[in-house]
Image (tube, rainbow, N blue to C red; front, side, top):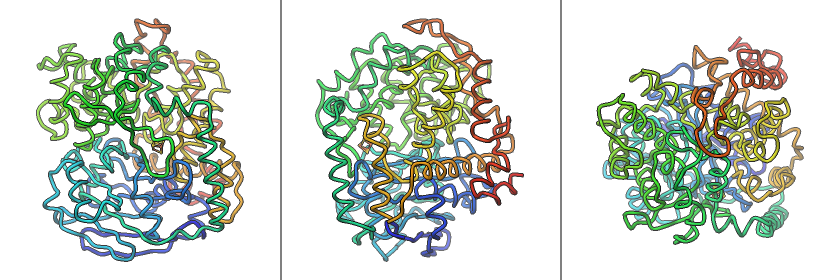
Length: 601
Ligand code: SF4
């Protein structure tokens, strides 16, 4: 099919076997690419295995839009059975590796088995090699990126792990280009468990699109439209950090381990401070909305900021200085640790210390402690060992009610939105397909702008609409959602792009159905892999139900548990799932997943 390489590259690391397989037409039309390919491969091939064993597989997948000269299309998906949650795990990463993989003519790479010694995989079009990485092992992700670029040239796509992944820290990510990260639920740990330090990809071919000239023209029009948008100029000044002030004003800024939603020092680190300290910008390939803002950090080095990492490594742990939060973020990237889970883990330890549940005194906002903890977490040593499997496991260890303020869903730490007074966003976290992440549905802006405090069915319908577009389509296409979310880039462009790429007309209705197929298969995967999976896995942390915030304009508010139950029940009904949250046979069969229905029976 046009727009695809039509091939899957399989690398068995245990025996050094490399094979290339054809991707079927039905796979492409039913699952599109990216996340869709990843979950289909996991469903078919990774069943009841320990996520850190050689039986697990790590999948890198692109979609028909990836790597094309289209707005923000430099993304790929990395997915596996998650060592953090035990269920489906993935993330998207903006990287030159997506462009090179397309040019090399592959839609997916599957790493399986385990290399007997540290290695990296070199993909140069048809030439695939498993190479020794003993000189790279132990290097941080920035150092290793430099070494690999020195060896293979700057014009290569590099995906790699830091020491966090090598040490099997369960929220280690896959890194690229000193600052791009993906795979929050431990995809870096899976890579480390296979003794793979990096993938280096160099593709020189061309993607065979249905109508290249039209695609170029449509792409140019898309870039121009984005540049002409009302919010574009402001976006370029602040990027995602524009959300910092908004979040604080609305009582949603994660503060002191999500206990509060406003931070008394927010003015010292919001988007306007970013503007003042601005020292450059970074981002993903193919994007004219580059959202990584560079500042000089507290160690006089360059650090890249965005809202999530500054929210979690700033107010959430009581840090009140943007350069200090920048340093923590850079350290996290060097170690290859997910910044959101890391901020949640440090916040958890600081709260445990405050409550006297651990002997160490770890004060809120202590920059020295925060740096020390990142290193300890990256090594899985000292106090860091307690949270190196995530806050869910840490709370299970220390008990004493700490599970109520271990801020996660399904074992994945919540990203940077306090939901005491945002029931729709709480449900978005509760039902996101990898745990408490905002990527499937960032409903919070819509919710606050419309009927914030309601628990009505319309909100649930809106949530499902967002999940279809973001979690279903964007993740499978594979393309960044931010042009649509942040500058209102029209959704009508995407079916038109797809048609110019593949030659096939697909309406949004078709794409919604494809998205539902992907999301239902992910749900079925959870059911199959996690014996206790069901309704009780779809709740946000108790803190948001039980402990109201003490400050700000939503002071005194918390999520109403009974009304949340009602929303969750509507959600299941609208999705065609039973009241335990499991897709019904009819729903799966309607999506063409008859075999899946039989298996989860
Ligand atoms: S908007 Fe930001 S995250 Fe999205 S593609 Fe551009 S640089 Fe990457």
